[in-house]
Length: 461
Image (cartoon, rainbow, N blue to C red; front, side, top):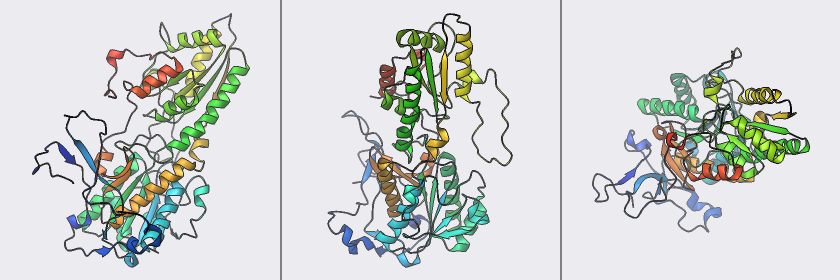
């Protein structure tokens, strides 16, 4: 049972609740949940989520420690705040591609249609600008039936173009009352602006975010869609680099993976592969020259085994690249908000080549692989398909129950409703003082390249 920290003796319990339509629209009618008449769910005991069920953010605690932050558990409610026949839902995908987008689109449409009897769902084409500058497409179970087998998004996507007032005008003019927004960190921040404007106007519109970022850098949640697929696909590139490296004397395979600010893909792909000798991520600074530096480690590993595989996240070594920045021009019309970085894979490869060119007694071969866009564009794997299905259905349940202004995501393995303001507090990073990074160091036998006393972050208890 949820206890209000202001009135409870258990004063350390904090519920980070999400907004509800009834918070600003009084006397909203409720309706029986259509699932009660759905034969598919007749076998499920206690299918409805108790309104007082919560999910703990911190699952491992000492017996006398505070109960901490909790989130509302996702799932179907016994009463809903929308008449199914009156629902007009829309779906929009924003930002870059990642595996699983089409699966989420499919499962939102099928969930609304088969679970709640909602037959009016439209897709907004081309990202946020599509609300006011592009056509929409009608989405039905027949239209979306096979789209989960394709990469990309059938709705198209874009960066930028967010105009809160114009978007909400379009929502209001089209009679839309449920908005499902698929996107990453920046997209969720803009979704929060849409929610605030909807609330300011007093509209009965549920605004729901679904976390999409291949880098897995959205805070609070365990993971976002596409991450498992990205790690699995990265194995192909790492395996190719390993085959190349061990087939030639003194050969190094360098693989650049996604991760501008967070090195989760590089870390998990390295742990899964076991063929990687060194993993470089943005959170763990490294240096090239001198005792204990990367180049010294490369020399040592080549002498030991005659080949080597290096995985580098795209944002690793930014502090080194900034010392000698190369001019980078953005292509005209590119609205991506991401800062342009010099290609760390090419830079690192050249530094290694230059270093060994000075060694007269060692010939070096280096193979560089960048599978970034191959990974982003593939369909989601089986694990991500299941995950996307659960996430999409949880989003639908939350919207029908009248919740709004939230992102849905897994917290300690349980789907939860998380208010936008927590999702938008900052990007999630690899903590290089916890056990997962220690496991990686033990796997690769690479040095940390850092002074332990200078490391920051909470330890994994």
